[in-house]
Image: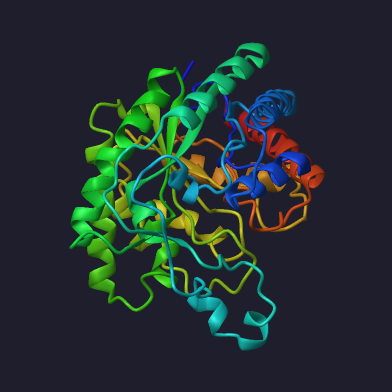
Length: 381
């Protein structure tokens, strides 16, 4: 079952990444650093960890589940393991987001930086499909045992890769994007062919405004947004929209966020992308109010909203009634069938960053999401 709509109750999901077990995290970190890790031991641990996390999602009551991104060391730079041409390295560490830099005392203790990042230094092409095949096999096996309502797997969008991995090879941004489209298209299609929905991660449509593209004009950034959407549409041309989700965010960190580009300057471009479901932040203090925008925006009939009803950066456990109220605000504007309850962002986006939310508290937050969806469903149906 690959449904994206809440036909008889509010469905629940999350954004993709979940905290890895400590031993798996250590293995991923070692592999990412070039240290020797026994391949058989690594594959076996990923397989068992995926089985465990899928089973726990189902036991918690989450409807649309994934593999926790357990085979990846980061949601965007995992592609350096799968594609050629990404062997370079930036000269300096990645700068802090613009909102953090506005507060020097906070910037001095900010731990959300990425350090030096990969860079494109050659032609982009598929290097190996082995990691993807491993992820598909492990997830297929885990889903067969746990039997969730529906499933998805995440993948980096071309625009996300282009914004995080500096281009030092192609003569233009457009050529870089085109190469990424051709290289990533097989991954997207393979996920759907395996029977899962695919989630395209697209924080470049929002968070990149205050990071990589903070020196750009508004007009230049809008052009980059449109190019990123065009790239998504080209790369997913063979996939039905109802088999796809796209995730937008403003940076998964506790910080000021006063420089976040408003939702109203993101959604009009985002809805031009082919994926039917749009996941976005809706629970944290900077974006909780933006549900009201959909009162004036004419959301296309084929789109489904998956607003964050749980904050992914704090250890507060949301009250289920608050979750229900957040769900109902959207449902009363766009229709209950077009709302799925989600999370603001991932809980374990990279092994390089310490999880901001304690793992057991995260599971309690997901349980609150499920309970809140039940409360909302009882009132909406």
